[in-house]
Image (cartoon, one colour):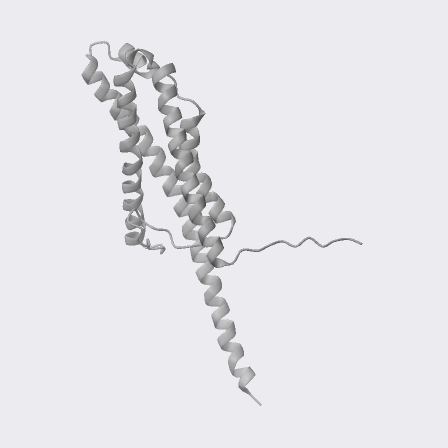
Length: 198
């Protein structure tokens, strides 16, 4: 006789607790990866997969949420809902939010890059490359140029990623959900008078 497998399903309280526990584990793993990336940069003068994992974890998390059907309204840097319409004012409002998100990502990354160049300047290939391009620059101006280039690259990547994900995925998905809910509400309103007839 076969025994049926009983899957224990979590209730809403347990799911919320598990989500908080997963968040704590994620922060712990990010701190470990950050420590490993800094240690590798200081001792070996190179960046490894730890930095790639740190940068990639947020897009992967957002993608996983969308795959599981999360269609919440997109939010800005202060966790306020962004407008999801297609007017010029609403698009500009969203673009300003992407710009601020890009700054909050690019500034720390540029500062980390400066710190790594100060700690181990002899191991920085990019710094040596720029020294070849700008041989007249001393160390401090060269660090400034490197910081500006690094900031520009990270800002452009963060802005573009936020723009593409929000405009092409989140806003469209949220608007489709609203249209579906409106359609369902209209169908139920039309069906209600027919059910009331004797």
